[in-house]
Image (cartoon, one colour):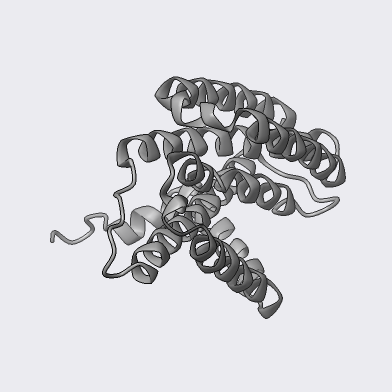
Length: 218
């Protein structure tokens, strides 16, 4: 390599956006790396990754159930975004954008982990018996929609936190989650049919919210 040629590490260190993202990742990991945070995550994995699939059996592989699991990132990403904003501290737009990205990534990691653990539990506890394969295509569509929906709620949480307060954002999210729960209870079957159209609509809304967030950050 020629002397003075930029390396990936140097580019990462000199790019302000990447530096901000790296900082937010470290801060986020420091928050969820404590014992107080690790234990609830392990309990969550035990309940939704083992107990629920074990109770449901092969019915767990129904597209409606797997689709809901694929969208679980929604309920993790948005609260994590609101919690990422320190009370009373000013926030720049690059910081806010990085917090949204990190929180959505966190929500998707949790969602995929629970989904994979649940499917593995069903197969492992039913060895020697016929187990139908999940509808991978429908599951992929639900996962993409879940990603878009997570981006919407995370962006909205960031906007509400910047414009008003973290408490206001948390209150709104609780109402929104209750509404989503009711919607899923009565219209859960539509989740498998939303597909890429719903995901595209969510990403468009998220883009609009991020534009508003940029103005709110000044």
